[in-house]
Image 1: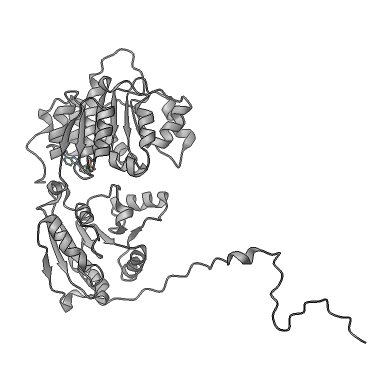
Image 2 (image 1 turned 120 degrees about the vertical axis):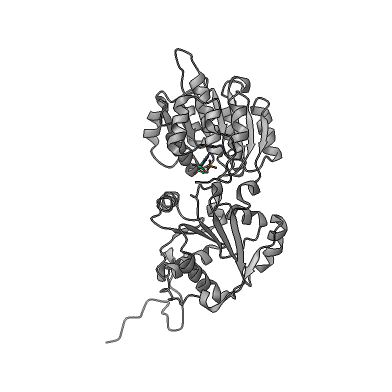
Length: 429
Ligand code: AMP
């Protein structure tokens, strides 16, 4: 595979031990991505790194490889555990990091622990009580175990904070500070922080809890530009669904993600696609965690190849690479456009981003074009692009909730005309 977004730096030329290179070879990684090229040489020299990089840039391998090497360099005879901690804001991200660590660390004898809330409390507790080399965790559950003295933070040699800006957004920052303050001082460990933006808050955290970190920035555009073919259509509202289905039929995407702006729009679209022989997974904000995980796994394994998502639901999730991004609804925020289309064409693969400039959201287009400093080519909605579609059966309505007062059984019956108020008089015989 020709990877146009990889650099000329080969992993074999970095200061990495053999078992690490072996893992990289098995994973099929030969050349560094830009963030790996910039962050790894610094971290491998035991300097702290604060990197601005989003999902899709290869940031996970950057911190995993550096963490592995640091632990391999530790030649002390009696090891004290845990030796490294990787903190992630969401369980999906923690699961993804763990998966990458298993892949890249296949030839290392490290014990990994995956810790996150919601399930397997006792099982995870038992794991952290053992000799764990690297803990990959969300903050809440980890603090819970720490407070029970299930493990110690005294021997931490590597600390990684992934998606630091999300930690702030999700209100975890107090938890993070709690944990960092209980580890050896920053100069006694290798610290790496990654964040989509190195905002003032994040930089402040970095300076406070890291040892003079080197700032490394990778712009989102560096990842996405060039290899994504972007174009748009201007359909009337009633043409949107026939056009989408027509495009899916003709382009036959390997794996696609369709972005919509509202949950209602997502549900309607999911029903139409299903009725027209396009099974799909619907990822909206209120889908429960367990189900999200299942949907993502199905998508990753290509059991379903079409995912419908809202921005909120997709944010921060590791969604596998897709060949096509459809903006069924144009995003109302230009930055979201870049995030959305960044899901395709990762690592130099070719991708297409197709946007509908519809009556409702057309006003976003000038902002998007100004933001990406590029005009998006508009194609004509010709008759042959519009599929004949089958209407789905209406969704069964959820049973109506009884009105709150209906529960109150003590309420006296309504008095209406003809309602007897007093006891009936005895009938005359
Ligand atoms: P990340 O930004 O860490 O989520 O990585 C995005 C994707 O790129 C993942 O599927 C990685 O397995 C893959 N990847 C990371 N580094 C490389 C590399 N140097 N060569 C090829 N693929 C890579």
